[in-house]
Length: 360
Image 1 (cartoon, one colour):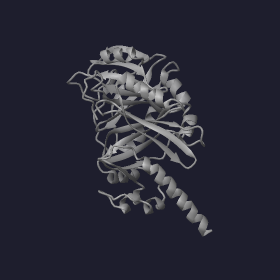
Image 2: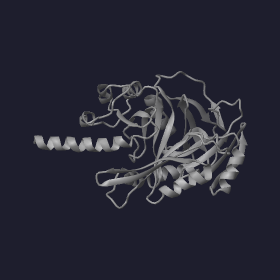
Image 3: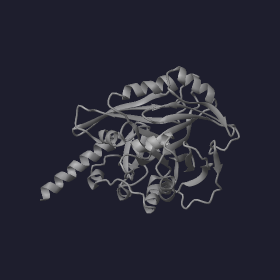
Image 4: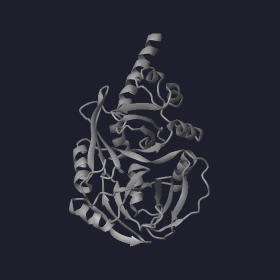
């Protein structure tokens, strides 16, 4: 939902997402074997206390960088020590990295890296939320969108399978209690994001508040969530505890056909969260694309809003801290984020528990 008023931040989009990881080979294997991604670049070797080993991989419009510190002085070392593997940088493409960096800092952003040019690309970084930064990336018009400073290209070897995943739909971000409003205000004030959606989700004796901010181009969407600490601890509290602070809980990848993509991912060993049969018995959505049996077979959830329907499923976390995971999502017009599924799943689980109790 682009804004008609002209802004220096109009053309922000996702360039790539950088993970800090303990072992690039192990992390890359999960994406290559499970999601059909392929490596297309690697950092050039360097010998210093701040040296890193990075690989770039992805598919279609999804571009990821996995970075491991080769010495204790690189920020990746401290990040992994505190959080484990996780998203450390949501890099944003812009036609004017120097200008946009200067303006963001003028508006209150904390500078992380001043503008610098290397290999024809200009980059600059600011702090975002928690230990996550945003690097502005300016590319020449003729540049390969996968090119990165200090990286050597790796020839394509051919994908083992096509998972049907296309791009990043959104990031879900867990924040400490009391940080939701300030974080929204930061993105509105500093990067001209707009808040497009908000809700309070109550699940039994737990509750969380969520606000969604989006870039003016509509290309970058952040779902920001904080727990209600006056009620019982829930999944957001658990993330904050196990992650040792705010961070990206999951990344949602789009699929043209979620049934086909999830079927392929499962065949490649990707584990997804199960859905109780009761969820499908209680389903009241008038489905427009898939049958209930197709969704039930693969544990896919469905929700709808005034604009259409969405289908989604979440992977089981393979993170040692059980924090980070993935989502696969297909939108048929819907613009919201499936909050109805959280409530419906909870009700279905409670119904199933009651049925099992009655049988005993």
